[in-house]
Length: 316
Image (cartoon, rainbow, N blue to C red; front, top):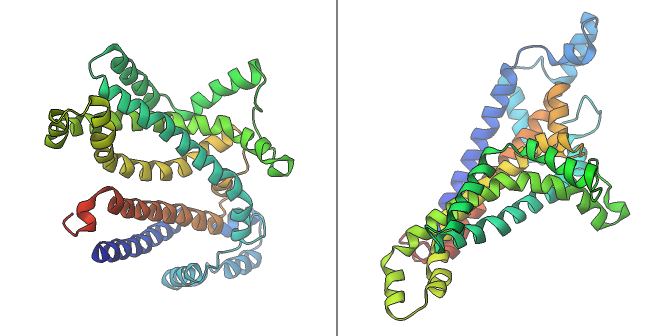
């Protein structure tokens, strides 16, 4: 088990290093001069040179990369040239919107996806199973931003139950803030719940064909208890893997959803940084998302130790 942990930790560190290198190179290859974008086309040459020196653009590429990685290791993020504040402050302001949104969406997707998939597997070939598969296929195909617009038309325009956009803030109460995130969370959760339902159904059907389930049934265990006690726990291993990836997709998916609902979160900040060519902010935010993806998958690997006894015994 210790070897498993050390190997996964080493893989995490290498992945983070590779991600930082890829992000830095991709942003360096973008055409145009960030200093000229900030100052405009009529800026004087000496003003451009001064800003490029302030941004470190006059230094060699490898020096800038090493300095940036060193600052990240020390927990020091850059300074936004658009807002003239540290990027860390921008993230701290926007994270209370994006993180609860992603957690709510993941919770909704899990709450609906796994039970529905297990229910469909227990009723394979029935009308209910066919209806679940058709609905989940539709959920995968429908873009979340289009579903978000439908939610706004129904619950905001027609029924008036929920705000159409914006964020009420937590100063007016926790429920008021979460109410602003409810429709965006449903819009994000729809395709993820559909994927989880289809995957859970397939994994449970495969587990139900295993010898240990047939043995339990031969000993007199009823089908529903055999599914819950034996088939479903073993089927959760591939499901947990996909859930780790989905949480990362949810964080990235907020870029579109937060703009649809006009939420002041990380996704909207990334969109604004792209539009304003604020490379310092964009670089730090993309690395933050990449680190979140890697860390979430590292946590999923650790969950394998709990789900799969073979890994705890060193045989996985």
